[in-house]
Length: 348
Ligand code: NAP
Ligand code: ZN
Ligand code: ZN
Image 1 (cartoon, rainbow, N blue to C red):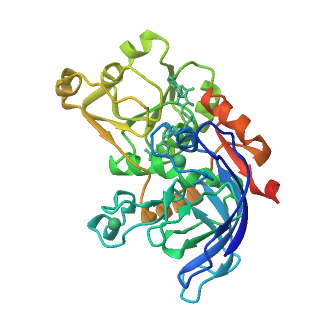
Image 2 (spheres, rainbow, N blue to C red; image 1 turned 90 degrees about the horizontal axis):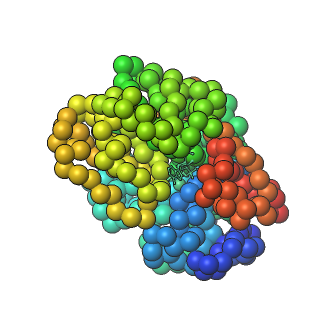
């Protein structure tokens, strides 16, 4: 077994504290990765606080992992020692169902193995995430990081980046399309950068105008405050697509009115409550309400290569791991510009 240092919560009420544990030995298809950076996703906080139910403890969160390969198993063909690699939200899947065969492992019929807060599908052991010094992952679930991207700011691409890239691609976003990004946080700011690079007209819908200069610098053409009732009049029936990254309670019917005929509202934020929608919000103008979940390995690599080509990374605040609990509080207060990334060097 491989000894690893990390930070874990022992239960849903506990803060993250230093925690030593072991990773499995490097199997023939595995790579051992020395983790350099790990982003803090709001999903880490939902799970640590058991806001979705069923959380498994002790929990080492983290699924925006970037590091360097330090050992490879005998059958590994895609990576070699020294490669810059990433790991996102899942580390395994059944590999047999239609979704896995079609490269959409996130929808695996047998359930993907999440990077943490889950059990290894062979051994049943708890799996642990990237707030730690090393991870062992099957090479088929490892991503290659383009050479021109800085490793720290590229870490959030592994979850925030793919979570926005996938719906933008699925709904054919490009020139001539009007996209609304609801919530300018970790996910939202990646959505602005990606939709802009795809050639769409991008509008940010944020609580207030406080982040307007940042949003425009990232590529937004327009910026509106949702606290201003006039926003809803001005943008009535305006968008082809809105991607909602907010995890708080909002008035969904009000936002559905902002879609034009055949427009789609894509839910990616995960609030605790269910989403109440009035039938008229959808049947008027044939609008759709849809959801999207991260992306498969093939599409995540495509997203990373797209970001390499367009020089897209996250706007980050790099922190030592001792500040992780404080960073969580700031994320919950929407006080993050725009993603915290943990410098894993601070663990050793
Ligand atoms: P985040 O950085 O906290 O950003 C969320 C943004 O939502 C905030 O910056 C804020 O933007 C807005 N917001 C927060 N509270 C609000 C409120 N009370 N009313 C209106 N707007 C509010 O979080 P994140 O990491 O981007 O994650 C967002 C959500 O997506 C989380 O629920 C996370 O679990 C989920 N998620 C889903 C997937 C998926 O595959 N579907 C993947 C990753 C994460 P403004 O200040 O601009 O209003
Ligand atoms: Zn995430
Ligand atoms: Zn499967």
